[in-house]
View 1: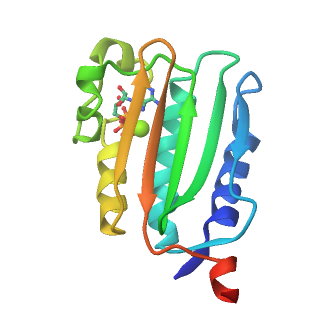
View 2: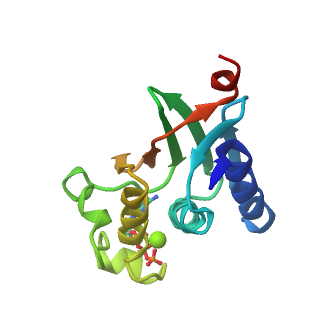
View 3: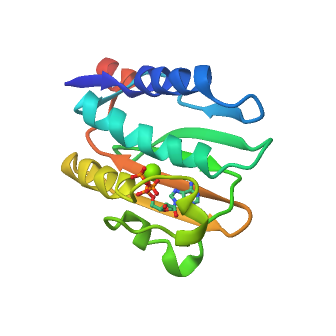
Amino acid sequence: EWINFVDFYNRIIDRFELTKDESISFNRLLLDYACFVEIDEDKLTQVLDNIISNAIKYSPEGGVITFKMEEKGGLVIVSVSDEGVGIPKENIDQIFERFYRVDKARTRKLGGTGLGLAIAKEMVEAHGGEIWATSIEGKGTTVSFSLPYVQTEEDDWA
Ligand code: ATP
Ligand code: MG
């Protein structure tokens, strides 16, 4: 199904905005024009729910979470950045493996099974996209994914 990803992303962020802790703030840097992507809405909702839950779970008090969306060469690049604990460089690719959790002691009290990002990876790849993360320990983490087959309003009129 063709979905305007700007509206879709905004709706998901709105839902988290209603329940988030007051001390965490959201910053949206989305496209200011409609951008259509062929996706399974339920699956992409699950992908974003997991990435955003992680960002909230690992954010410090007063942290800012930045939601971004860019269009680049027929792809849409979506990212969620936090100002949390971060992930050591040597573990950054492992977070997409099943049951992998950085620092068992630290994450045990925060809950979770370590499956969220493995499922997200599977779903993004099923859409022909890629998922990756960048992080600076103690500064924060950005989780990004790409989706192909972008069509914009501008294309329609070309
Ligand atoms: P689940 O999603 O199944 O509830 P989980 O959140 O622990 O559990 P994943 O979402 O797969 O599992 O994440 C794997 C691990 O990657 C986490 O346990 C955590 O150590 C690390 N991680 C993921 N996102 C972040 C983030 N934004 N900041 C810091 N660490 C993160
Ligand atoms: Mg998770």
